Image (tube, rainbow, N blue to C red; front, side):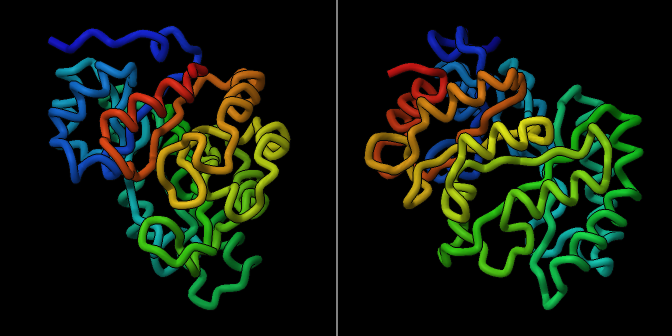
Length: 268
């Protein structure tokens, strides 16, 4: 029996998810699921399918499923068989469970030119996107920052380090099942101008992640992103997908998460 979800976050049009890796140092998955329900989140994401029964016991989903990782991605044909196999496995698991999205990455450049990287990504995604279409699952390509040289806060060497670059890949693939994971933290570091980019690329965006900058910590008034304005802009586009809380708490993790969920839902 799941704990009844709370308050303002449930009433909000924005559906929220918790990126488990950020809170794994503090809580077990079982504890995280209970807390997700308490604070009004509908998903705990980036979880191995073997653990999905725990989510279902709490009436939660995994709104974003892992496949391959970001170092070795679709920009290098050498990795296509591995990446495609992992994406196919994740697509099957999502389709069976009724979950919507699979995460994917360009990979590190490894001396591959930007244009060659785009072409390689497109040729690789063309081998799997039809399968995603058949299963009604979205592939979400994540843009990452390359400026911050701190583990899991930035990824120097990653090729898909701009929204334009990732959107160009998505456009060339040309499928409604190929989407952009618009990580607001990463976009702020590389480009800024967040609301303009949300409006410009709204038709390609399939997922959002949130965290404060600098530091990838709580999205609160100690950092530079005006999340109230950003979330208002996202709602105005008619977005109906999920927003993932992917920040590293600096204080009490439950208090930090509760406040972040309220902020993203449009609270105080």
